[in-house]
Image (tube, rainbow, N blue to C red; front, side):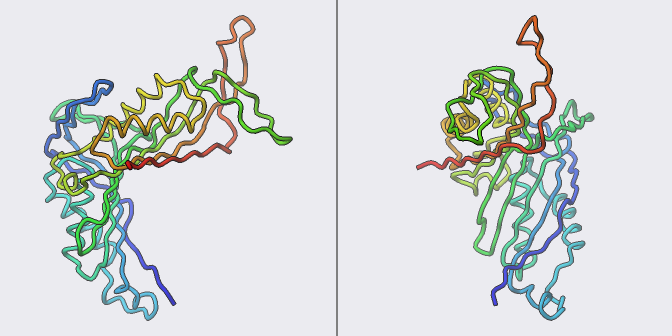
Length: 292
């Protein structure tokens, strides 16, 4: 019998005050100018892997089990020691500390989901309750950093013109009409991996691509590119990201088509319309681009 074993603690809330400032020059189409980090806020999820935990499953022997409550307390203690300002750095730091402290863990995976705050001063930070947030996922084993992934999830983009969907395959089940210009409402998540992940894992900003810059870059493409489909749009977004950020090895997209239903159209001006939310069923489109 073969076993794949993991367990861990998820949704550990961490609010780290007065992390070191991070300054990154903005790209021309980006509004991002740096992260003050009055508060570095995140939800941390930890998973540990290894056959050493098998006796807990097969024999009820917990002698090798690190309690998930202990993991939570460990995250709090180590977050206090972290002196960087990036999600990638924090995820890597925590995963490495777990692997070093508990050598019977064969591998550790730490995911950081940003709780987005905007810093207005060294005293004031406001909470942005939107779904748009950065993530980082680091995996460590005893050979070192095994994988580092970053991303921007929960982006919702809307435009009323500059998108089409036509000339697709038709059969007796097809009811969707060709549309040469349509509104577009999409949910987009973007993840990426670095060419030199170890440099980014250090947390000092070397080689870092801030997720806020990726968001702004994607919005710029969404605004100025006339797409023939969501597939066409994602490819353009990915190609532009890889061209702009040479430190990225791959980009990975998942998009949902959340185009509204048109509920009413003005007789005097067909551009004046009322929309409503569509049925729960939605299109799902993915794409991964990797440098040759």
